[in-house]
Amino acid sequence: MPFHPDTREFLAGQVGGRCSAPHCAVETGTPSRHQGIFNGGDAAHIYSEKRQDARYRQDIPPEYLNSHENGIWLCPSCHRKVDRLQHAYSPELLHGWKNQAIQRFQSNFLQHDMSAGGNSKPDELRRARNFLEKVRQLFDEVHGYIFYNGPSAARIGYITDGLVREAGFVGMGFGIHGWDNTKDYWCFNPEYKMKQEEILRLASQLMHELNKKTRNGINHIDNAYVTDVTGEHIYQDPVRSIMQSFRENYLEFQNLVYNS
Image (tube, rainbow, N blue to C red):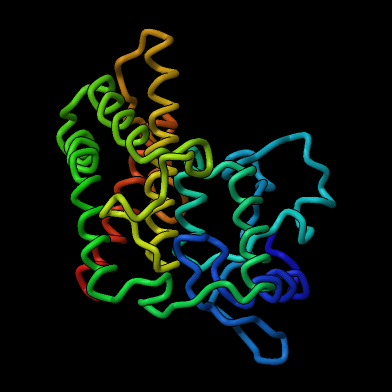
């Protein structure tokens, strides 16, 4: 069932009426029962109520499911994505997003000035395009598999491993060889930087899931899916789900960069 209006208003207010996904953070506004119907953002469940929905766990108490602790404020697009491609968006990740969004709002961290971070707009755009080119090989392999059943899981894993190691991405962040000015493809504008981090997070997650397949002697990615009530495909294989999310996030960033 949907969250109570008071809970929706609370969740939106915690993050200043912005999507909690760090690579998005689009302004949605804050719902109020005094303003009538509001469609700018969604109060999304981290753990679902129903067995067939995203991130269901039968041991979660019913009173917790519709409490604000189990909610996260997202724009409608990110809400659909985290539920449709649930293997790419764990409960731990969503709780992390929620906490970061609350902290950003409280510290007034997020700025949308293109030059924020110390670089000029042309320099940030150049860096963003360099990043897209850097990640392009993995995007092409993933795109080829999705549409043409092309490269093997082992080949995608090899390319992903090289990219993640070069980027210095470890777990949910970067190691000592990560984000620095010596690499000409890192952006420092907060909006661009968060989108780059999300693309690399998905690449890192893809690498780990592919490594699991390799350890189990599996070199196949299962394309099987079920269709939900909205007609969206829900993939059963975590690797396939993460690949889809990686592709969508790459294209979203590419569209942003080349239309700025």
